[in-house]
Image 1 (cartoon, rainbow, N blue to C red):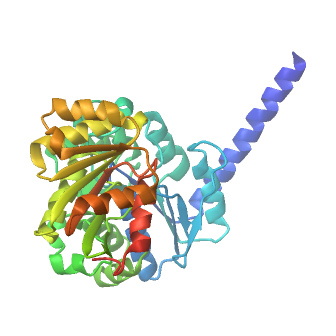
Image 2 (cartoon, rainbow, N blue to C red):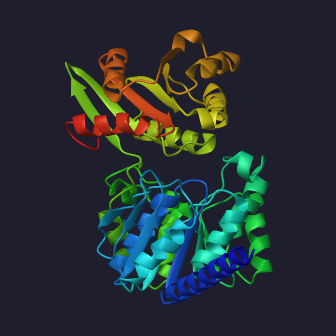
Image 3 (cartoon, rainbow, N blue to C red):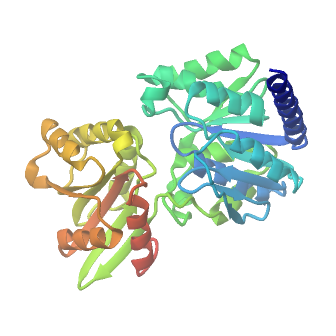
Length: 393
């Protein structure tokens, strides 16, 4: 019994010392930006960090998007090697790494989904001086709730105490929830305006970037003293997330395919917004093919996607790949997508998917890849990048 008591005492003492050490490391960094939201967290984190670096602020960042990375003060990327399942304790280790380089600012993407863990990430681990909420979408409903208001209330756990929160969200219901939380802890909500970003500016990016992401990142950089011009110049030079919206052109035997990797936008609303943007950029793309990659543990998300597709998207063929494609086929019939417009291929290697897409495209095709990047999706996108003749189309 005495041994157990002594062991518990040692563990408590060690935990207390480690937490106090973490707080000292956190407070040694004057600017701490915590980025949360449903979509665009990695992109906005990268944009803010690049804008601050361009403004002469020694800045490091951490993203947990398609591939977890630390971005150092020179803009170089360091892979995060995870030997164990993802755990929010990783944020403590990241700040230990940050502190070795004495940055003036850090920009950290929130890695928690559960509401309680989101609160811990902000109020115990990051203690941000600037909060960011990209947007609120109907996603992760099992963890955060079945309505937009409930999800907003969950994400609001990262609203910082007595510090500004910036958002590109426009929904009155969401803004009401954010303001409710902000007022309770002495904070304010600042809304960025995507309408300020003109199409010519967006065309300067080497990939398809959303105006809301750019507007939000610029607002944060301007708040921290970096001019709009300097911040934007830095953002245009930044490396995009591996899951960023990029269109690659692959040509073979007289057949041309434009491949858009939209697998990072994997909730229904974001996917539809990306589809509409693609339609504007490529009004005559040839045969429109939707490549839907599914995960068994995110099947509810796939259901939401196909319901949206049945209502709003006009395509020539839907190819389902990944896990649970038999179940998905039954749901496709239920929502009214004709069987002749559906092809199920299940789990196949990227090379096989590449061949199937060329066989289905005819002389010219546009492949809109969506759903999930895991379980083969990212490999297909990478193969198109490698095989692309001209890079971004």
